[in-house]
Length: 368
Image (tube, one colour):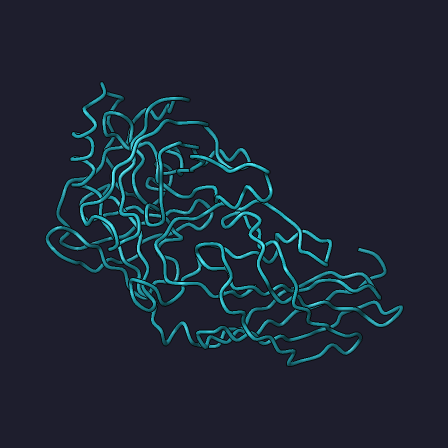
């Protein structure tokens, strides 16, 4: 799908699966991913912010979703701004390495061995909401509430430490200031609509094991240290300030406005109206913005397409859980007894002027 959102500060919010009203089908194939870069907002058009921390001299780690689509990355330190370059990124585990020439400050140490314990105290440092809060960063505390993450993921830890938009990519530390993870996401308050209860302190970090493997794979010479006695929390906060940095990602407005062509393949049953596309505009606060305009530019040869404006549950693994928003749904229905391949093209224009063309290949068979 295509959507429009405000420029924002990075933190994924986790969404489970729901259903699209008037379609009776799960919506996991169309929901908005929180890692798409968008323009506008308090940081200016095409600018968003997140957190990163040093793991070696002039080398930072952050989330892949923080730097995805960036035309440039700047690292903000007490002594000024420096340009960063993306040296490596992995969308599957959501980590990225930045190299920053001339960067000053200390480097974090990873705990080794990385036997994180259920219930152990943890500390978080980062730059939530970018320029809108303290330029010195924010420091919070909690505990490890689960040793696995969403849907039992071994690459995540669940924590109770409060995290906000902009914390993504920041360090998760133990009570001695050693890094045991990377802040990634939180469960949206909209989960109440699906779960029947308001989630409290359900936040996630990438595990220490996944972080260490990623750094080793890309030959980053990071430092480790054994688990140590707890320090005063003020001391840990002071340590974290010295190796953690705010980063800003800029997306060229020229690049953002270019036309994009997306090709998709969908299996549909013969002679049955079936949803083949859903288009919403989900904002960072999980409310709807102005809807994109939708136009069928290449109709099917062996059937018909109907566009309907309905209310959908915009669900996704990484965003607003069960947020009900208006949207357009495209339905396809083949002629009777047709089996084979049909093609359609849909043009989507976002309120910012971006144009996307979806070319959808429809494989039609009697039963699916």
